[in-house]
Image 1: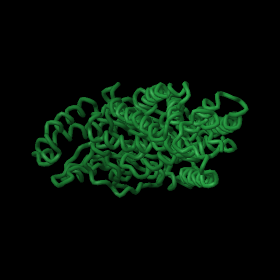
Image 2 (image 1 turned 180 degrees about the horizontal axis):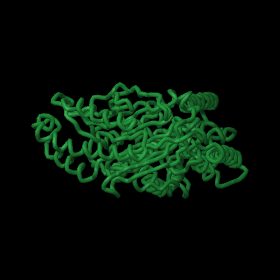
Image 3 (image 1 turned 180 degrees about the vertical axis):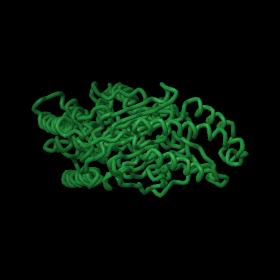
Image 4 (image 1 turned 120 degrees about the vertical axis):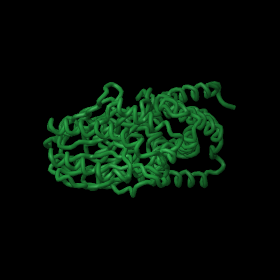
Length: 521
């Protein structure tokens, strides 16, 4: 029978669930909640039988997933909920792994036992980022700390997984302290070890920010979006069609004037910024809508503007055709000679929201007098492996035309900060219906503009023309793989102990005392 204290298990589950609602990186995030909710959920799972604990935490994760959809402005009962539930299920597995594995590592391995949960958490985040169609858009603990720049600098070495590891390790250490009833003799080793590691990371990050800021010359970059009135008119017209196929078959004479109003708006804003000194100009994702037959003419017009003012101009195009899938989501870079440098197609359409044929997923680059430029489109930046192509190719400035919606735009832009730090490039995210923002390769915000606070959204920033080469960009997800290997090794250690002391294993028993919780043989 559980001890009396364990009857509060459902209270800990409730507290952990409430805290987790503010740790999913949405509009109402509270960064400290990401550090705390795991403490209570671990306390719950460690005082319950494995299956019961897993089901309880899964229910908490499901509530968090639904809440994330709600605060992101997405219909909670949409098919996207199924994807979020699948992702949250993967993120629940570390609690089960911790419950089954940590007690079997014994008191001599108390420090090692605290590593089970963070190792498993990194493995779960890595699986979601690599193999799900949502990338890292949901469930990254690191994203909740987007304003903690000293902490985030470790991402230049480990990727975002290093930040997630530290947050999850904090939860495991605190849960261990709780189980050992705050006995300093019993907890001093894991507490000191964690404190030293966290201190080194934060101090090291602070030193990097203070002593090694970007020192290269800068280039003036402008992001321009169409006026809200012009965009609203286009949106109303598009929404008047029941389906994308109906829109594709509409009379071109009806579509051209509406598309032209937005395009003319963007061209006028681009010329204004070029005259003001911008050398690189970025339009938002699908900022200009254009019929397939009219695309060449638009490219020519933009080429004339770029050649006249000597600028690089990145077009965000939504190209409408009469053949399925009807729309192509493109970013086209025009150089100061008026020539097309690249045509990049979005590699990762948003599941459930976009019907697109994905691009080839090859990040284009070009050397310019203002550094090496690269290109992603919006949701592509939620896939660390895709964004790392730019880092491994020495990109100095990543252009990310984007398009969001009011409830989600700010959080989505904040997530992109991690890609800049990981890969050592500055990042320009020009975002319609959201927060446009430029950050340098250490995560400093150089400029930002909220689409909903002005009629004509323009973002101007002086951006370092030289990035840095990071360890993460060079070695990729080695840290995540090391976590996989370390977890596998701990499973092996626990298996050997189970073979040596089969009669004394704690499988399936609540960890209700200090001795039981640590699996003392």
